[in-house]
Length: 174
Image 1 (spheres, rainbow, N blue to C red):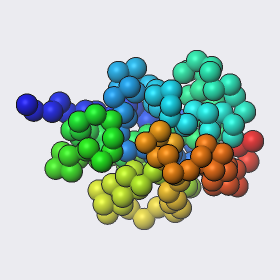
Image 2 (tube, rainbow, N blue to C red):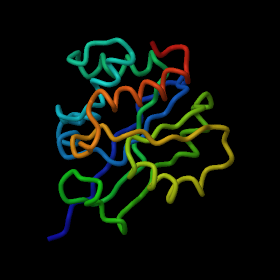
Image 3 (tube, rainbow, N blue to C red):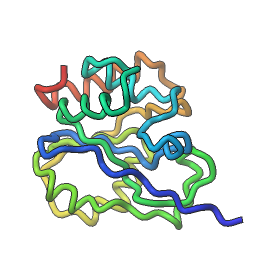
């Protein structure tokens, strides 16, 4: 049985974005809901709410607007891939197609820091994207995955690491 080709969402970003958070590819619940981080067990929106000061239970549109207000862009490294289930480890390496990052950076010139939501996002970016983008003055940093599959750290530990990384980068983050 052939696995279907999965496609990511468009980036969430406006022209004022200074930080870019990258996942690898949305999980099955997110793809079904057509929303970034739709799995209620994923800590992403709770962490962002704690950092930016919004209600994590607010509407998806409100949460996206909070990111934009905080000058944070959100996207995925992969434009498409095949995968069984939702785990990054199940992504078929031969099916990977990366997003057009040079075009993104050209149109979002205020981006000065890229944060990877987990190891797979970082390794895929470094392998498939970094060699294709011209020299841009941004810093790169991997943060612990907000996925429920990454259970080696508590929520409080993840929050502390995300806060320490994001808060010093922009004055718009609480």
